[in-house]
Amino acid sequence: MAAILAFGRYLPDRILDNAELAQMLNCDAAGIVDSCGIEERRIAAPEESVADLAERASRHCLEKAGVDAGQIGLVILSSGSSERRFPGPASQLAQQLGLAGVPAIDLPFASAGGLFGLALAAQLAPAYGLVLVAAAEKMSGAGLAEPLDRNVAILFGDGAGACVVSSAHGGLEIIDSVLHSDGTYTRDLRLEFTGPVQMSGRSVILQASRRIPAAISEVLGRNGLNQSNVRVFLLHQANSNLTERIAKAMTVPSDRFFSNIRRYGNTSSASLLIAASEWLEQKPPEKGDWACLAAFGAGFHWGAVLVRRA
Amino acid sequence: MNEEMQAKLAAIVRRVSGKEADPDPEESLFDSGYLDSFALVDMVSEIEREFGLKIPDSDLNPRRFDSLNRIAEYLSSRGA
Image (cartoon, rainbow over all chains, first blue to last red; front, side):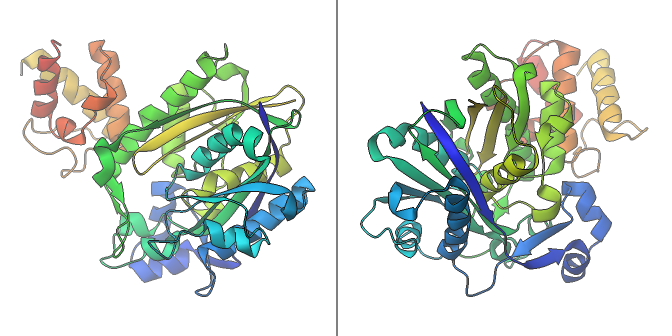
């Protein structure tokens, strides 16, 4: 058993709205909303690194949890948009938090990275003590890189999310998780060291629309639950049209899917933890409430994590 | 493709695309504007319902669903 003590987030101040983006892309601003549900996204400053974004989200999270950084025994950082081949930003994040010497693990994931980090932290917390999970992305540059793909350029924003996981009982308990990967589709969604994100939207949407509901059903089913028992579903914020298809496939009203994609766009691996952070502040669960987090992304990697308010 | 299957598939494409005209059996449903990524999801669900089968995730290659003829070919291989 493990529990989430708090979530945190950081979104850069700079807002890129659809009117400005449409001018850059020479396209229709209203069409952007129709195709993905995004109205604006945040853009990090050029001098802000992925580790910097992660640090800000982590400090917000630690403050929320009432935990001093020095109590952290393990750092996990997911990013698919870090600046270097190696080292990844995890050790830099740890150092910036005053945790030099504490083990720090990079997860070079895209959209499912926050979820995988959370699931791994639940397993590792009994061995390492408090685990800080962060996911940070500077995806806007990758989305707007040449050769420009409008279908990709409209989606991505920058930001970071974080959570602290403890092996103690109480709070938001992590009950179970399921994780899956399938390299068959490696080429369908990828970011090389140069150029923009390359995405076969048809393949990604088709697979995600099936794999996410399946992962949710799997984790609920093996805990004797079904979707009617779950108060809120928190998904990687990829595209509002995808979330609607998933809600329909699961026969769950779409208002039980927390969404903030309108304001932040798709922040890749950071999106799930950012959404969870806002959900916990805006609609805190009551004792006994179930929530299910799920994500799907490049790899393909996907899965679901089941939590309950103790 | 027999006439019954073609009529069923054309009706599904009309429903998910919102278009009134039937697509040509050979033409690409994506290139001709009948389907986008999300309408493809809807179409696959409708095909499963209409033909009473479950299409496994490993068969969900968009190219299989690019035209009425390709869909019919796949469905025939599944015994539909």
